[in-house]
Image (tube, rainbow, N blue to C red; front, side, top):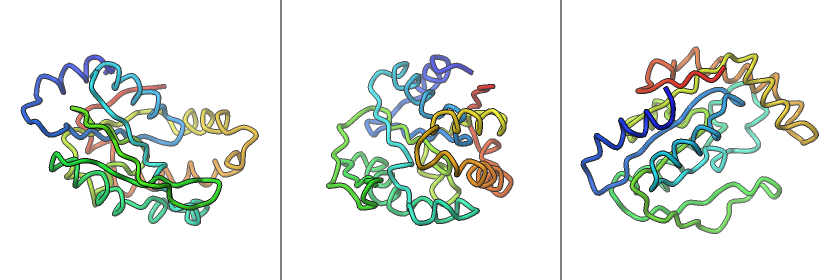
Length: 185
């Protein structure tokens, strides 16, 4: 499906004054951020939060994604307030210092998109109104990620990360939990 088709479906079902919560998952390098931008444009009044803002940096080199993202902080600072129609204030990881930022206020939007691997992990999946899987073969996603990170500190981590993506998929099957699938080969 394309962003405008998914946006039309989501818009037709909006019945609340609270933001519609949308999660976008896929392997690293699959095109989640790109699709989030396309969906934001198609929806109009939307905000995007990246799961990378919730990284636990010291866990990123471990061979599994469990613990690599602070999903409870995402839940407490973003998902619970959004699901209640309250103001969202969250702290993002400052990669260079491995500290959290000052609180970031997210302006109210009719649609809130959270994008990244594990964004609709089973521990937080029930907060979302819609879940989108970006279907990209792992080899393609890994190559895109390596190209994107060429020359930076993450370039050498893609073998571990691609395996972590596959392990996460085999354990939780996010593609099966998706309301929409976007093929991005």
